[in-house]
Image (cartoon, rainbow, N blue to C red):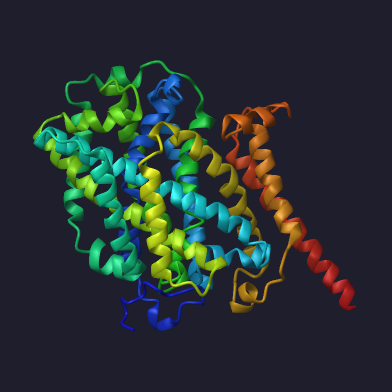
Length: 452
């Protein structure tokens, strides 16, 4: 097996000979995953009207929420990358350490839904952008055609595996073209506009809901990050490549989406891409570069869906799982509406923010080290840690009910209350972390007393 032939590496710890991703490799990978049309669309949701699932924030409030959440989210993502590089196993296999072998099945199922959901939305975004381009140039939209085509592309990229993807695709893609495209779109979004007027345009002051939305977008990568940083050369490479790599493009991209939505008076999320496509030849080229670059997010979610399934089906061929995940995502992209995107983000945040808090607390109290025994010889179930996770989730939902209407109506009977600060993400993280730490210390003390 060559250094880049790792598409089917399973759930066992990655051997030293395959830990080949350096700081530049990881930085390029995570900055490419951060550069996303979906991130731009998420930024637009911050300022879109409430009747379009937006938060109708003023631009200063939106920028404040973006900066705060990007800093916090990228730091947590970096820590997740460090833990993944330390244990050298996929993210959902890693969850065996804090939750137990069977306890990891619940987050595995949720992460599978998340990965497939994100892959669906990525394919929708790519197809929407490609359709807008082809309609402008050829008079042919063909959204269905583009969804199927890029579903095939995502499958092919996922077959490469993380190392092959970085070495064969990311390094060879015209990164400077993407950067130039973003610089141009930033200029285009403000061209002919009164920047001061945009800054002072009135809006709501819902800072914390905006913070939760952006943080949910960033934190959604924490259940995937170890799938890639397990191939990192060291723990520090895992931390800096994931955290800093994602952070660098995140703030300007979220802000770009908000500015385009305001300056071009966008009424809903799909209209943002249509507006860019109709902005002239340079805008078309910029959208083309970003649309092609978007395929790496679809790759990541298809690949991680397959790797997550391997926690449940360790003997299943990874290529078969990749093909199945890509097929499901492509089918979903044909029937799901992009306007359901924001509630999906919030719901994911309510699960994965406290989940990562439990993992972090357990790892810290395990001496900041997970060896093979901690993962593969973990007990079947660690109920105390599952309760800590559920406790954080319940607090999140009590502070800010999220999800389908039938679920939020049930939660509404609990008389939810929002805090004046902290939103839902930070309190739920703190609660889950504290509960997990207390449970970990109590179990350790009980074991010591039993041994005495």
